[in-house]
Image 1: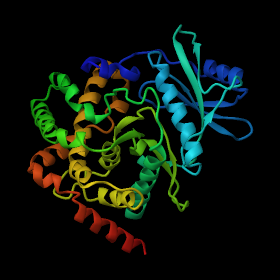
Image 2 (image 1 turned 90 degrees about the vertical axis):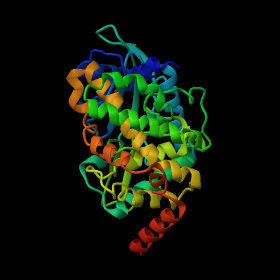
Image 3 (image 1 turned 180 degrees about the vertical axis):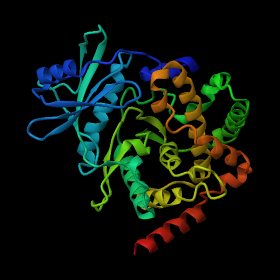
Length: 362
C-alpha cells in the first residue's frame, strides 16, 4: 500500500455529512425494532449514537464513514463474536444482529451517502480518561489487555493484514507527512525520532504477531471502581489488525507517560506492565523494543493528527486532544542514548516491578 493510501484507509481522509438523529432513529426502528432517545457521541470518522430505549436498555449504534470498506466491519464483527465464544467474561461489546440476522447492513442516507449500520451492546462505566487510576488499577488494566490478547490468539480473518496508519509497524511510510509540520523544532524532533525507529525496526520484525485490538487507550476503556475487576468495558475495535504483540501493549503504555517527560517518564506504566506480565509473557526482545514503540506512537500521533486537523478543521479540538503533550515527552526520549532506552523494561527490571506491585497488593 502506498503512503497516501495508508492515510485514506478506513475513511480517515473522507469528509462526509452527518446523518440527522431522527433519520438514524428511523433506520434503527426499521431494522432492529428498537426506538428511544439517541445521543450523538464524539468520534473521529463516523456517526456514533447511544440509544436509550423506553425499557431502560442502552445500545451503541454506528453509521460508518461512507468510504469505509465492508471487509473492515466484517473483521470487527467476526472478532467480537470470536471473543464472545472464547472468553465470554471479557468486558467487550456484543454484536446485536438485525431483524434479518445481519451483523451490519448498508443504507443510503438522505444526503445520498452509503452508510453501513451496526448495533452493539452498551458497556456501563466511567470512561478511563476521566479518572487518574491508582497503581493497583493500572495493574488491572494491564491484566485485562493481556487477557484480551490471549483470547484473540486463535482468531484469523481474510482482512486481518490490512495496513492502517495507526499501526506503528508502518511508521516509516508516514515520513512524507513531515513536510506538513510547520514548526522547525517539532519537525526536527520527528525526523530524529523516525531515525531512532529504524534502528530497532529489524528486531521488531522478529517479534511475535497476531490479531490485536491495537488501540487500548484511555478513551477506549470504561471502568468502575466499585467492581473488583475495575475494567468494565474495552470498546472501539476499529483499529484491530494483525500486528506485533508488543505494539498493542505500547499503545496502552503511552497513556501513562509523564506529561512533562523527565527521567521517570515510563514509571507509571510499570504498574500496567506488571499486570500484563501476570497474565501473559513477553520475550526479552519484546521488552527491549517496547519503550521505543511507545515513542513511535507519539511520533505517529503527531504526524497523523497534524495532517487530519488540516483536513478537518471543524473537528480539530477532538483530533488534537492528546497531541500537544507529546512534544516534551519526545524531547526527553531523544535526549537519552538508544541503549539506555532499550533497558527501560529489561527482564530483570520488569520482574522486579511485577514483584513490587504484587507485594503492594498483598
